[in-house]
Length: 127
Image (cartoon, rainbow, N blue to C red; front, side, top):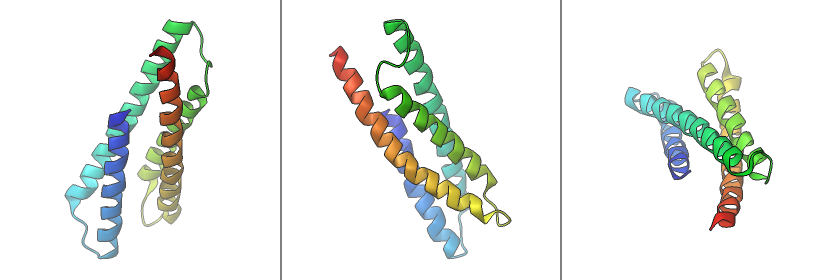
């Protein structure tokens, strides 16, 4: 989860840099590539955490749905998916995609906070 939060923070910083440079008509290509690379890594991290959580919970309890952590986690997975999809749609012909991407990422911040909190409460049960 720490890598996921770090990736989100890097995306926030690089996305801010992209916006800043886009408004000044000089956008370095490496920044866009770095943003896309870290975003792809975030997708992989979230899918990996989902897999680990599902397998671990089924292995420990034999079923799912023992806490609010499952819906919080599924919300994060869905938001990351929509964010990645909307990012792939961003172009001058589709100005709505950038707004959707930014709005989803704001919701993702809240969802990551919720999944971190609920995950911490789950971990406390095992300590």
